[in-house]
Picture 1 (cartoon, rainbow, N blue to C red):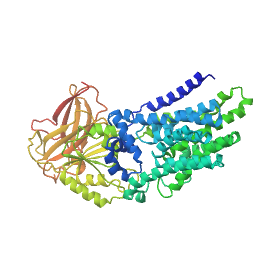
Picture 2: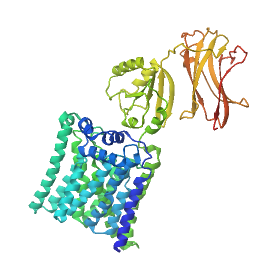
Picture 3: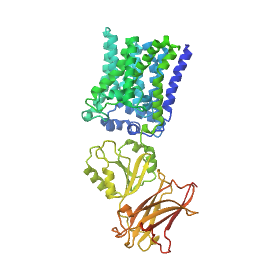
Length: 624
């Protein structure tokens, strides 16, 4: 194959990967961890981030510097596309690195291109390549470091030492677990250069310097406040079975595989074992490098996870090159074995053998981009758009999830707090806080939901419902939004709009001109009891065509959903009633809203002073 054609294929593979990483790059809202990176890596001055944020977080100092620098390059944090472009570009370095690695290990162009395309299409790499975190560009840098390390073992020229020191040093200082891949390379060098102690001592000295820099950063930042002694880890504890049902599927393809992970994990594990055997038959050197690159990070993470809950595939993203090399080189070797029996060129047959991987990869990418089951984050952007114009300085917003993504999208005038503040916060402490806040604020929004597994889930909402009136309950993009006000309504400045049989008086109403996100129209009506009724009563709000008088939608209910009773009117002052009017049956046109009262058994309505059985609140239009 001519050099022009070879480089053309490499170019196409890289551009395919770039296109997939750009696809809908700004479409998904920030998830919590990514929002943390935006707010505290990119949007916080570096000095403040390193002195106030970094000591309590398990990240290296370098990622704060990179995040801050990139935000200055792209002009701030307003554009998610620009921010995430850092990860997309950095991760893409892995594609040419995989081509170079496979070529150096097996010398076959078809296998090298196959490995590069696997990286470009790898769903787990794309998943991380579309968020502003360090994992994606670390993964790309780690793959390049592996290639440079292999070059160094093969031909230790001065330029190779310098390149490896720069790239591997960058990768090591990006995330603490990159050291696992450095150990894998050291073991490989020990196996294949064990007689060259001068080379080994130089390599180990270089890696030792990297380790000293990493440990020094850890001790200076996190160790200064005893963080590592108290840090529990924030993901899963060690589980051996997770190697099969989580790590192999994630690192082999991704976390959005639309198949049973347990069965698929077993099948892929068996495929990897078969591929490893085929690679071993072809080249023990390639076998050693691929297996060490894939296995050592997983084993070392398992050891670390005995102390910290860090057992998650993303922390060993540097193992992906090993998985790809096993599958690509093993597939190429299988194609070579099948070539005498199949009328296909060996190169084409390699791609046929790899076809199952590409089919599952495309299914996984489709699930990632399109399936609601694999949504990356709640609709924090929609929640922010809903709240920002609605709240004012007299309101309070309580965010149950304590999620940094809310802070990125929320720009409202009202103060916002997180509650509960941690999983183990006692219910009594939460309730005492709510009691103080309810005395300070007349309107409180409670948004989102607690994180899964928190034992104090439901405490805030239960207290609010027991002590304040729920005046709004709506779902915004899957996130609940509830607003509460005091039951007692100040009896000031109201004139009677209508009197119903001298039993109850209509004072005022609030209506939203636009429907809520669920398609309903919210109406709040203020009533004053005048006299007890001999029978129980229900209020109603009906919506009619403004021209023809046809009933379109309605909401009928007992006073405050049974809290009050018209036969006693235990609450003698002004009370507030909340109505939700479904809008599904209303098309473009003009409508009028009428309100009244009736006895539910007989259906008899209370009459107004003018003899009408309902009062017209307002006329509104849809679609004009």
